[in-house]
Length: 137
Image (tube, rainbow, N blue to C red):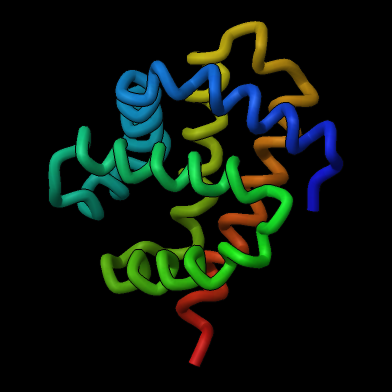
């Protein structure tokens, strides 16, 4: 999936984000609702709590890059759960765009091309694993 250097960039950039998790998640949701206003109806609870779940998932992923196959079933289950909330495949594209934007805002110049590419690959793998969930028997 990722090269050792890409995994290192993900871990380093996530560590830099850890202290800013609240603001990062608010940036993310603001951008998500700007990109896809209809996505707002998918969120019925407190966005701060939802943001903590998002950051917890990113932490799990960033800490499991060497053994991504081990978390694939967890991501598939998360995808099944999200499908019951009305999340469609197209929503994942908006989510990735918004999250990449929020990471760039939070990390500034540290979110260079290589780091951005590593996150895009990682988030694409997460999306694929989550999308496989609703398809599973």
